[in-house]
Image (cartoon, rainbow, N blue to C red; front, side):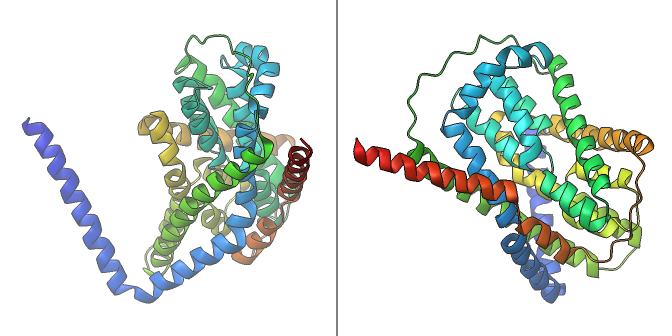
Length: 353
C-alpha cells in the first residue's frame, strides 16, 4: 500500500515538474515557441497532409472495403508458414512498408477492434510496421538531401529488410496458435466504406499534426538554447526524424541516417502510441523494437553500401526541399483518383437499382 502511494506521488511530482519547466520555457522563449508553432503548421500544411492523408484514407478504405480479407485468404498459407501469422496480418505488415509511419499501427488497431486478427498479431504488426515510406526515404532523404537516388533506395531496402526481420523474430516471442482464417461473406458498400475512410483518416491526421506542431516548438527552443552542437543535433534526431535527417545529411554517412530512420523519432512514437495502447502492447517491447530496428537498419545499410557503393553530395538546406518532394505523391494521387472513380460508379449502380 505504501509503495503504491509513493509511485502515485512520484508521478504527480514528475507531472508538476514538467508543467513548471514548460511554463518557464514559454516565458523565456516566447518568440522561439511562436516560430516553432508556425514552422509546425507550415510543415503540416505543405508536407504531412499532402503526403500522408491520402495513404491514411487508402489504408482505412482497404480495411473497410474487404480488400484485406480477400488478400488474406489468398496468402494465408504462405504467411503462416514463414511468419506464423494469418494472411491478413502478413498483408498489413507488407502494406505498412510503403504507406508510412502511423499507418501500420492504425491498421493493426482497427483490425483487432473488428476481431479480424488476434491481439498477438496486432502487437506483432505494431512492432514491425513503424516505417518511413518510400516518398520520404527515397525522394526526400536520398534524392534531395544526399543527391543520390541509389542511396535512397539502399536506405529504404535496409529499413524494409530490418522490419521483416523483426516480424520474423516476433514469431518466437509473441506468436500463438491461431484458428484457421474464416472466409468473409459480408457484403460491402463501397460508397459507405469511402465515406467512413475519409472520416477516420481526418481524425488520425488531426492527432498527427498536433504532435508535429508540439515537437516543432520543442525543437525550435532546443535550436536557440545553445550548448554543444553535436548534442543538439543528437537531440533533434532523437525527437524528430525529418529534422534529424535534414541536419545530419551533410555531416554523417547514410549508415547513421539509416539508424535515425529506424529509430523514427519520439514524435512518431507519440503518434502511434494511442494505437499501441489499444492493442495492449507494452512500451518496453515497442522501444526495444525501435532500438533493434535502428541497429539492424544501420548494419544492413553498411553491408549494402559495400556491395553497391554510391557517392553522396553535401546537402545545403532541408526544409523547403522536403516540402517539395512530399507535396507530390504519384501513388497517392492515383489511389485517390481510383477511389473517386469507384465511388461514382457505385453511386450510379445504386441509382439504377
